[in-house]
Image (cartoon, rainbow, N blue to C red; front, top):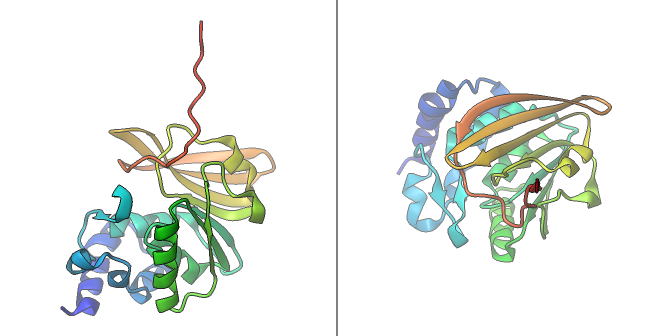
Length: 217
């Protein structure tokens, strides 16, 4: 299979049509070999327009969603990024192409090790993988200029906003299935956060997520 032709077709027919037009993001997608992050039995489907399975019932996002979220994060070369849920490491690699450093947290040690191998193969040196529970952010390297949460949450815990720099951007999938929305949050000035709804989707929940408060009347 000619993966380069398939990658170009993916960019032209899936990613561009989802309003991903930032040349930096398109270049990152063209440079990072997605087929090398996909489990071997699904390698021939690396550029298909749907999610792909990982171990433990986890999934890779569709290519167009990965690219759209990276564009919405508006990454710059000096940015420090937090990713919650390393998965295959592909999204980590895309963000590392555009940012200064990506800190990625994964609670499954075997997934983190496999992702580390993928990133090493790609020559990615500005990504630091952590094994642990990222459901309340990752305070060790805070604050961050951008945060991407790859599992869905019923509501966004305030701790994530507290770990975002002024001017920082956060993308999270909020709600419960099947009605989930992808939300972008901008920390526009101290203590002020502006939100915008991007699109609807449905993805598995983030593990260990804090439960929303229940009110008893």
